[in-house]
Image 1: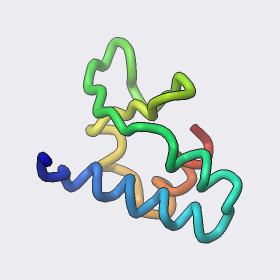
Image 2: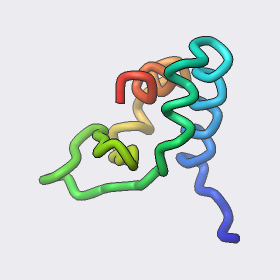
Image 3: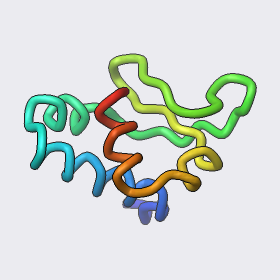
Length: 75
């Protein structure tokens, strides 16, 4: 199994925090696969297709941990 990138670890931590605070949304978020999508023309921030959470690493690095939790809940 490949090692997780630091950004992926932040998302996993955010999903766990969301699961603890808001179990309904956290449960849905844990079922979505994480995909780093650094194509600026397609994904400038974050998006979902119902199966994946796509995120732009450059955008997410500027967010605090709490903002990443909100982002995961939003998507």
